[in-house]
Length: 398
Image (cartoon, rainbow, N blue to C red; front, top):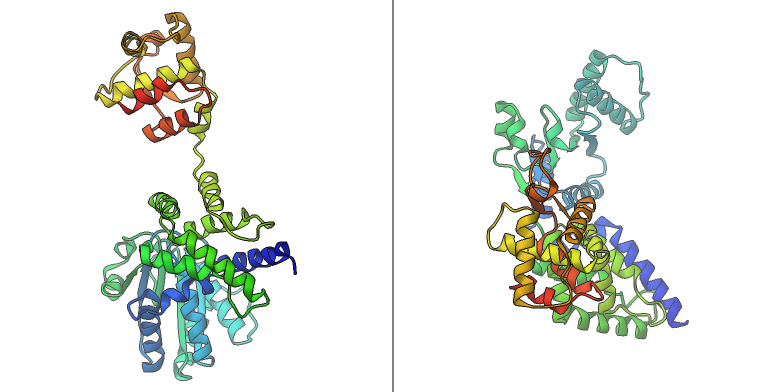
C-alpha cells in the first residue's frame, strides 16, 4: 500500500476521533477526581440506593459538559439497562411548562412503547407524567432528567447543564437548596490534560489496518513535534485566546486536514497553518492594503496612545508625524492635505473612528479620534507588509 493511501487512511481515522466525544473524553475520565467519576458516582448512587438527587454541570461553552454527561449516561445504560429512563430537555426549546411537559410525555411514551397524543392538554400531560413517575418508582426504575441550557428553565431537578456559572441563583430558594452542594465546574483543560489529549487523539494504533511500520514512524514523528518548543508555543498561543476543549478539537481538525498526503506525516507547518487560518484578523488584513502614509498615521496614533494621550485629533497626529520626520528624516514626508485624505481613508476603512458622536459640525481635522486596531494587530500587520519601511517597525516598539 502506497504512502499516500496510508496517509489518507490515517487522516480519516484521526478526523473520526475528533468527531467522537466519547473517544476524546474517555482518557480524562480515568481519574477518580474527574468530573466524569464524580457525576457517575452521584447518578449511580441514586440508582442503587433508590434516592432522589440533583446536580448542576457548569462551565463555558465547549468545555465538555454535555459530552461528559452523555458518556456517563451511555455507561450507566449499559450497566443498568432495565432500570434507567433518560429524559432530555433543552431550555432553548422547552422553557415553557406546557412545551416541557409535552416533551416529557412524548419521551415517556416512546420509552415505554405507548401511543402519544399531540392533542393532549396540559392537565392530561401533567397527570400522565405523575402516573408514569409513580409506576417507575414502583418498578424500581430511575428517571434521569438531563436539562441542557438549564438557566432557561424556571425550576428543574436531577442534572442541569448551563454555561452560566450563576445558574443556581436563578432558581427559587427551595429548589436552590437542593443544588447548593452539588455543582461540578468544567474548567479549561490543564497543560497535562492537553498533552494527554494530543497524544490520545493524534497517535495511530499499532493494531489497526494500517501498516505497523508506517504507524510506528508516524507516532515517532508526532512525538518529536509534541516535544518541539515551537509547537508548544503554537498551542500556548492558541489556548490563550480559546481555552476550551471544543476549540482545541477544531484547531486539530484543521491541522489534520492540512496534512501532506504525499509525505504521509504531520509537520509543524500543518499546525502553524491551522493557527494562522483560525486567528485571521480582519483589521490585520486591512493593514496590508494600506499605503505607506496611512501606516505612518497609524503608528503615530499608537505612539500618542502609548504616551497616554487618550484624546487627540488629526492636528495632534500631524504634530507627531512631523516630530517623527524631524527625528528620522526620510523621503516619506507628505503635505498636510495629502495626509488628510489618507486620514479620511482610514476612517472609511474603520481602522480608526471618532471618539464620540459629538462635534458633527466640526471639521474632521478637529474631531477627537481613536485607533480601532490593537497593538498586536498593528505590529503583525507591519511585519507582514511587504514594503514596510524599517523605521516604522522601530517606531512601533519604542
